[in-house]
Length: 420
Image 1: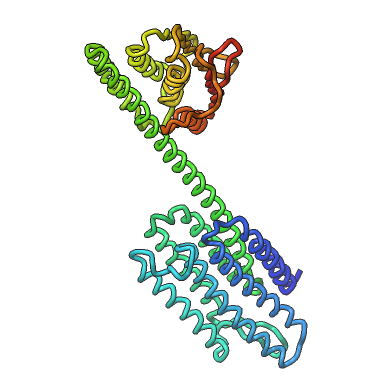
Image 2 (image 1 turned 180 degrees about the horizontal axis):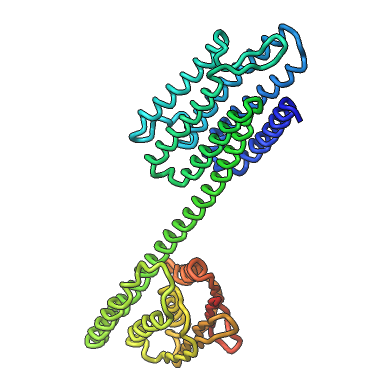
């Protein structure tokens, strides 16, 4: 296979890969940089297309065609130089319009532009000096003494680019791309030295773009995962902040009533409340599940407070499983709901708090013998956030499920199922 055939095949492969890359980038590359990335790919497609046109013109001998080949080859070299400048700008800023926005890198950017201008002037001067290449009347390409300089200047651009990357902390994840590009360019230069007739620069440039594309996809996925994690943490913090004022309001309301009926009991309630706060406020912003025993301790403090007011309610504990973790303040709102909406208006109210292991799942149940669950939210002017809050935090933090159902014999059962 001669050099012409090799160059033709490589040009066609490069164009096909670039077209696929351009088409795929419409849906896969992060939206804010789609336009700039497609612009870079488009420039390289133009460069490869010019090379292919030049090769096709070699099949059409004649004086006019020879001039056309020289013109196309010159434009091709100019396009290649500016394509790499755009690529470097994209790698640093996701947009050439912001190339000067990187703190402390203005001198590097000016140097990159100067190298591009020198390269362009060298290519234009080749029209008169034939210092890079010359096409003879028999259509043979003769390389001049400076035929390696355009490639070397592109390599200099990439080296300067790597220095910018190291000064830009937000682009640390792109260092591997720059090193890979430098390696690819070194391979291109070695190829040119061994056999200058085989044009490896553009196919290897296509390989660089594919590498950048893969890096973009990886970077986008990492950013999305980070954003999802941050969103989840913010949502959990918001939900926890909703729980605490809701509970504090209810406890203070209890103490308020006791102040009139039994000041001594109000004092005891205040002491219980102090102990509860001492234990629970430390967990206010905990965004990870806690041992079930710690949550059970908070429930004990809460029921002690509530029984001061509703002393007819019986609290029964049937704890068979404690070897698991649960989001803080998820069992207490269920007990609170059972007392306030199930048992407080009746005599002989009973609440059973139980835990057990069922297969690989941990089951926590709060059962009462009250009026039964209706699923209807009371329209009393208050925000009823407790149950939905518990459900969301269980899902976000433990992948757990909360189900609430009315019992046939009367009352309600709220069941938390936590997977192993």
